[in-house]
Image (cartoon, rainbow, N blue to C red; front, side, top):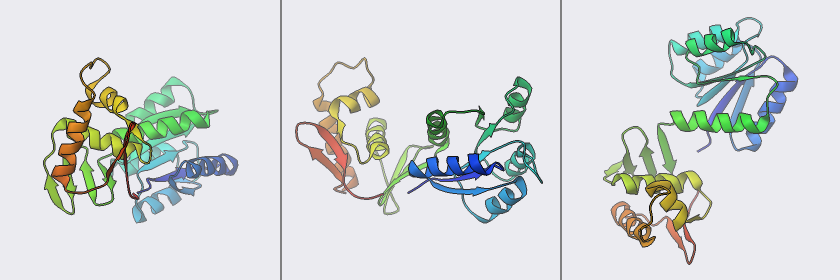
Amino acid sequence: MKESILVVEDDSNIQELIVEFLSSEGYDVDFCNDGVEALEKFNKGHYDLLIIDVMMPNMDGYTLCKKIREISSVSIIFLTALNDEENQLKGFEFECDDYITKPFSFNVLIKRVEAVLRRNRKYLKFEDVTLNLKNYTVEIENKVVELTLKEFSILKYLIESYPKIITRENLLDEVWGYNYFGDARIVDAHIKNIRKKLNYSFIKTVKGVGYTLEGKI
């Protein structure tokens, strides 16, 4: 499932570049030119993240953020030429998730976007499987399945990494930590338990390498 981003930027050249870049990274991107239009779009649609300029006609970014915070905890990143400390502190006082100043690197922007979305994500889905990242529960076809924390972490990492092949060493480092020096076959045992509990064959073994998922999100 694609995450949806609304870009609120009155400079058409910057807006176009941001939209093209985020779209190329697989996000569902919408855009508008000022705060009034953004508030209208937000009230009618669903967005996982808003990227907001501060200096805009009709309604500035701070006012927009304040109005949105009255009704939603959606992720918000300010992207603005106002780079002084006072304005940055003001942005965080309005409960933004990040504050990026212009000029900016698109590669850094995407990393900051990924970090904010990851931090505020509540659910992770793969086909019929839904992970609740707040209470660490798993649902498959609307039925709750009990997984241990290690099993939950393995499944989460595989879904987040899809469609990449993940080695046993990757899983050991991610789930058990870099200081773990035990037998890598512990990963196989946990994968076996996950398959049994979910009763759903979508974790594929790549012989001699590790694991990946089969299917489409």
